[in-house]
Image 1 (cartoon, rainbow, N blue to C red):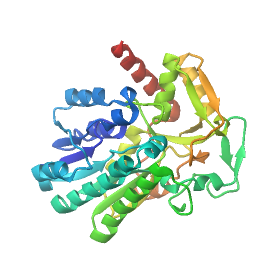
Image 2 (image 1 turned 180 degrees about the vertical axis):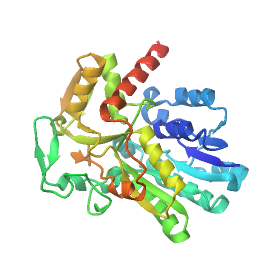
Image 3 (image 1 turned 30 degrees about the vertical axis):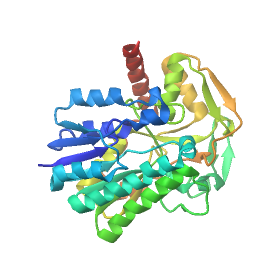
Length: 357
């Protein structure tokens, strides 16, 4: 039997992976305990998505477990053993601001939870492919010291710079920078996944995501940029822009496109490899540009306010360079551009809000 094990299976990337892998594996086992609700309150709850997966995919088996607890994980890994061919680790505490409130919890989930999963893999299914969803926040605020210029709607890098054409590559330093507490816990996990590949020879891949998005995101104020922004556009809830004149730039990758990257890696894995993963020059926007798109798609004028205080360690401009991944896996390319993604988010959000009434 071939089994894919997905942590954070009711979250954005986890649920997309369940749907993607359901017809490619005999069984997809999901691990999720809805900690997102603990992090972000009712807006962050993923129960609706867990129920959707259970209804849609007969070969999806859910396990409510805490990745910080080795005995809970051990029970699952002992049950399925070497039938596990893929571990896709998407579970995380994903917020800068929240991490500073509870550093022990943040580090426990992001760093210790990742080590627990790596060790369970090594002990019970060492030939499996282990894929980790890391983050561009491992680079800390180093991107903010690039030569940036201000335009009418965004910050942009100088055209003469090496990063202008494709974006930031994997050689950017992880050192001498402010990461945020969240970024630091993800660095620890990121390096450990690399090390299990290089030291133990395991098939591990690290994907440093930009903004990950899609129609199944449980967006909240502290995490889920485009999803929460569109929700505010639909409902009229006031949105707050934090600093940089609203011109901060992010690249955005649809959850399906990211999971498709994972699929390509799984079919031809490497040991301890690292890739930047985002929308690149193909799909990116500033906050102001995203607001404009939300207004265009929803037909509503957004209610937003501006705060001069930016989030500590936040990026002013970040666009991922995917050239390395595309060189290793030339069959991969983006499917969803920014507007198509945001239309999907809008339509999904409208449907969910209608059901909630």
